[in-house]
Structure formats: C-alpha cells, structure tokens
Length: 177
Image (tube, rainbow, N blue to C red; front, side, top):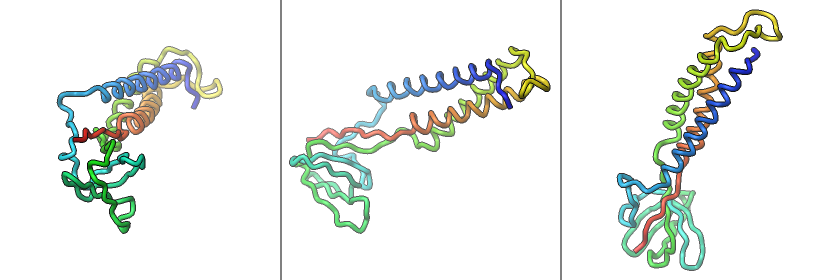
C-alpha cells in the first residue's frame, strides 16, 4: 500500500505532537508538586530499590532489607548474597527508585490516545489527494483505509512515547538527617 503525501505529513505531525506532549509531561514531572510524596529516611519502605554514596565515595545499589535510625541493611541483586550494612551517618546521598505510573499502563494509555489522534488525522487527510492506488493504478484509498493507517501509525507512536517517556522510572533523592 502506498501512502499519500498528506497521510505521511499528517502522521509525522501526529508523532511530533506526541513527542512534544511527552516533553511537557517530563518538564511537569520534574517540578515539585504539593500532592507529590516527599521521601524521608523514615518513609523508605523495606524492599525499595535504592542507591547511595557513602563517606568513602563508594556507590552502592540494592534493595532495603532493614532500616533503623543508625543502620541501613541492603541486599544486592542476588538474594543469596550477604547483606551489606551501612551506617546512616556515613551516607552522603541516598536516592529511591520510583515511578509515577507503570510502563505498561503508560504504554496502553498513550497508545489509545495515539490511535484516536491517528484516526482523526487519517480521516482529515482523506480526499485531499486525487492519486490512484498503489503504483498508480486502482482507486484512491478510501476514508476507512486512511483511518486504519492513521490509527495504526498513531497507536505505534503513542505506545513508544508512553513506554519510553511517561513510564520511565526516576531516582528521587531522600533528605538525610
């Protein structure tokens, strides 16, 4: 199937709009919000993925096994490995791995939005070109074909934006005492 010039322009515009929307979402995600949870040492849950920089400049990453006012016990990637004990007073920076939404949910929602926008773009691009079908013969694409192509391209673009922009995990700093 050969796509008309207008269909390609419309789909390209759709992709740019979705990319700009993801950039504005990322900018909004970095701004502090009053409803956003603020991490503290006391609120880091057991099992949370953390990374830290200790007093000797060593970077450690792992899951919280236990936490008290004086000691943080980390498990590495392997559960069989012995836990590491880190004194809280020796921690220079501590960050928690957190996401706003799951990648799956963000991907599905963005794919749905992209499909709707793509269908609208496909419908809008119908009838704007008087070209024939593939290789110059046959009838021009119908409105349904334009909508189907727009829906497919829009959902793929939306899925990619949702997966790699909205559903990305972020490291959030934890203030230390």
